[in-house]
Image (cartoon, rainbow, N blue to C red):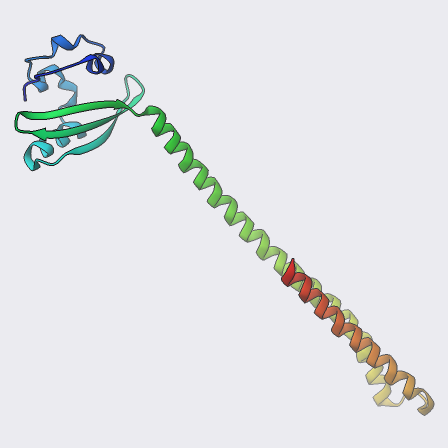
Length: 178
């Protein structure tokens, strides 16, 4: 676990001269990584011989670092990249997706409420339109109209029912076609 090479990127991430790390044990040069996800990843990479990539948050510097580990015969090559901006974009995208889901839910609720309102309106309108023909039919059946007026009553009933049917078809068409 000896450091055999350090460059300017190391200096940028650590704030220390790169030459000061060469030849030192990793755990002595960077004691803050002991017990972290990075230590686990380094040991896993060394054991498995498989490359690994992790993201690590450096709280003291307020940045996110992508650490890419590549095993080789001479040890593990470690590459650092500042991915703070990428992380911010990803978090902003996740927030936008949550907002989109919330808005989609509100839209579905509004559509459902609109459908219920249309159904109530249709029910009320048809109920009102059917009341008059129903009363006329009852009066006709009870004989409250003289015989010479039954032709006009039948004509009125037909027109009221026909208008009701056309209104129902219009409302349904408007509902279905927006």
